[in-house]
Image (cartoon, rainbow, N blue to C red; front, side, top):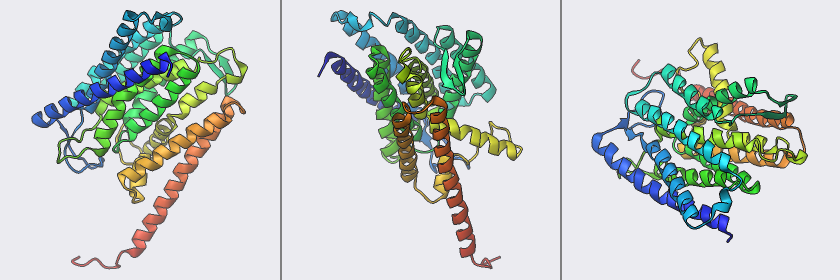
Length: 380
């Protein structure tokens, strides 16, 4: 095992162990103080469950990064940072903006923050990252667009970061889904960083991966009876969204100057979040068609449709994670053979074809259940 792999493995293990301890502490506090997410009509769970699991994400990430980088400097392993001093600046900015979203997320988990105020803080946090110099400078030919001037690329990046954060937040509707998609995306983006030898991006990826993976286990396999069940909450979904947007925008620049990689990593990075990012416009269209606010929560997310097809939560999770893996593999296979625009359109067609199939199955089950009902209801 080479030095890079050993450092990354140690960081992952440290993040996972620290995450388990912090989440266990969060569970003790939330159950003792009864800080629960109460059941509602639009929610899947039927009993109160703590929703502060995501409180562990940012502190564990910061501690893991600080200890790992500090130990590396102490051991004289400074060669890993010689070409990446600018990333250290971006990292400091990322953690600063992450702390802002972390505070807003905790406030929303505890007392519910108005969505307008949340969007304002998301805008500020996104601007902080973009001002540090991290913004989309090239669309690599997507719909015929290549290099972007700052006046376009910077606002576009702010909107993209906000969009990713909100899409992760909105997809967090059944056990393990948001965290599972985050895990797949973090693994993919870490592999991309490894392929291009960007050490700090790898370190950020594995440090976040460790704590999210541990949370996923608590969220998916924990039980209310044993006081081990916990939800992510906004503090977690906003943190994951911010970290993923940071890594994806950076990955979009990897391979610059290599014609065979033009837009390849960008396409792969965004393919990991196809499900949450494309589920949002479908929902917004449905809500507007029904003369509802696009910010009005409902039960029309893709996971709700799968549940109405009589799949269990775990089965729905397996289907969506399987589709996500398939989309990533498809993008990896065709990414170098086709333009970014073609890859993007194919991914969209595959996803919306899947949602169309689910809608058709749902309608058939609805007709079947209606035909199975008695013509007269006893007692009426």
